[in-house]
Image 1 (cartoon, one colour):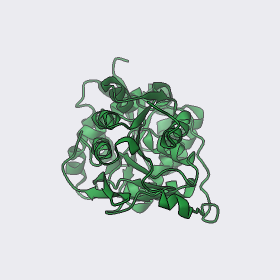
Image 2 (spheres, one colour; image 1 turned 180 degrees about the vertical axis):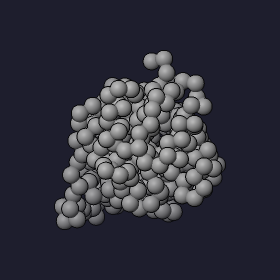
Image 3 (cartoon, helix red, strand yellow; image 1 turned 90 degrees about the horizontal axis):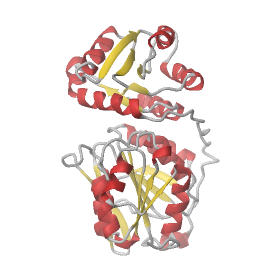
Image 4 (cartoon, one colour; image 1 turned 60 degrees about the vertical axis):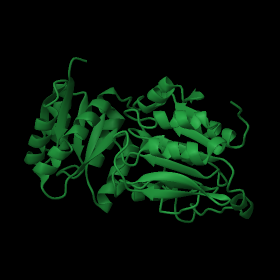
Length: 354
């Protein structure tokens, strides 16, 4: 494509203006139109043929989620959601990712003009990544009831807490990819830790959603949490996650510090700590995502004796992070998403030798 054609959908005239001005700072992007609600947007999609939509969640006449669901069923295309950083906004955004949105942008709470300018680089990069994304119809997994989600962890598996640990990194498109992997884990799966690029406030809601939909326990990581079989710890937004050895067990540190590879939490930070603390007891997994975060850390894990696997291009929403890790030589195996969980589990059981 010559230029990325973008349609901006928002009921706020100010937001439409700000997003348009930000996107048009990049010469590879052309904002071909704007719409104040989904009904206007539907007609403009047909006449303007955009490559990417930016879509607000709360709009008159039809909310963004209803429109997104109809769009992905009839004419799937890359969508970047605009979301408020509230509990309701987090839940709505996660639902949007289930329905097929590629990524999301959190709107500033106070000074909208200044706040939007502060995140202009992220907005441009997310729209450009969305233009390259592979968009598919999603079939959302029904949320399990509290009774159905009841989980048990055997005493024997808790004793074996120094066995392999699975470390996972993901970014754009990773919310659903990570859920697919964790949903395939049995209740006694090896202890798992994960970093996904989400802002502060979203990771707790995301972990709670995963916990309802998976057989293993999932929670947002807290300082000193032990890494145990049947459990997954998700890095908190705006904090790095590191692994360390604590006697006969492994635990995590929640670390505030500068961004690494332009991210906090950073997959590189997690993977490098895994290389140091876990060595051959680590299994590294890198999923769909924009950029190169995790590539150097995965190489460090492989050099330390860990088994490593990357999601393949065909099933990635954005083949950025896996591609960079492969190019650096840090990946033992490249597999489609559906085969990542079985491979990681076999590696953790020492059924795969590299």
